[in-house]
Image 1 (cartoon, rainbow, N blue to C red):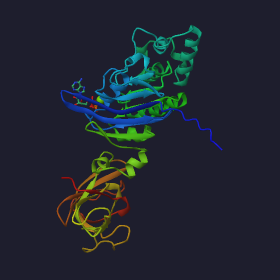
Image 2 (image 1 turned 30 degrees about the horizontal axis):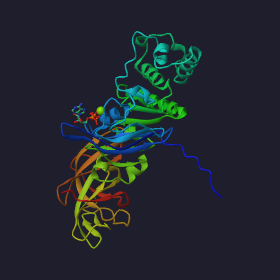
Image 3 (image 1 turned 180 degrees about the vertical axis):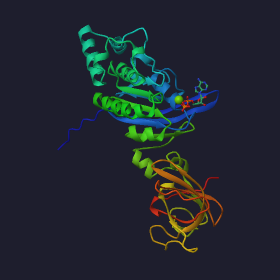
Image 4 (image 1 turned 135 degrees about the vertical axis):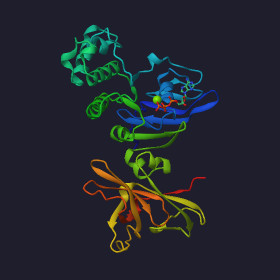
Length: 365
Ligand SMILES: Nc1ncnc2c1ncn2[C@@H]1O[C@H](COP(=O)(O)OP(=O)(O)OP(=O)(O)O)[C@@H](O)[C@H]1O
Ligand SMILES: [Mg+2]
């Protein structure tokens, strides 16, 4: 029996987008798709090409090559180009300035066409949805930063865009306000079925907001996936380092094993004689006291302990970050420990590493 399968086209599909300025590739072969109601975060360091990618999708910058589809329809390739205002794309940028000479209600209604009664109903619905039903006749300067942000969201959503492009929209808000507004914004966008491409250089924001994270570096997407997958199966050392401090052990592979001061690590898939880097996060290092020059016994899970001396200990609130100068090579390794414990500089201690939380990559260079 034939199955009746209806598949909605992705809200947004970009294929092989590329852009150079003065001969330098700023966006290099970027492809991604966003399903209805899904949020993809474009995450990467300053200058990696995030805003340029957004500007091409919005239609304010023309790509050198590649295609953009919205709801399955081509909006731009290198010859055909739908103008920005007809792409069904909403924009929300860091400087989301409301129109100061228009009331809150008029700001939200700004992009609306059609019968007046319908426009008014849409404005009423959105203002109530963002918790500002009483503010319709206020002026923007009478609102707090967070309230203005919510008006900007309502304004961007009013014409029912298929895609919302957001470029660091929360970076102007203070921390306490930001969490609430992020969650609220997400809820409204999901409810409207909008596809969202959100640019940020903050990993915490991406983890909090994204269904998928597209990790970008030097104009390219190096990895795409759910936050959990990116965090637990990173593509390379830099991808690990983007989300936390890292520790690195160098080694050479001998018969699928690599010897380190923490014992031998299984490093299958790397050729004999290859130089590898074993990378792990500070939260996967455990510490123990020195008992007359001896530490804890080796275990299958943590291997052999190695000794170091506290070089620096910083209290961070919910945890402390402790740096150790290791006896074996004088290099520094970092461990995070619960804040109740802050060892004094110079204290000798033994470190063990959760082997199942280590990543092995070919050594750079
Ligand atoms: N119109 C332009 N002309 C020349 N170079 C440009 C132009 N627009 C962007 N660039 C360059 O392209 C690179 C990427 O810029 P882009 O604004 O996309 O970075 P970004 O990832 O958004 O960074 P940030 O996180 O700092 O906002 C930068 O080196 C920038 O100087
Ligand atoms: Mg930018």
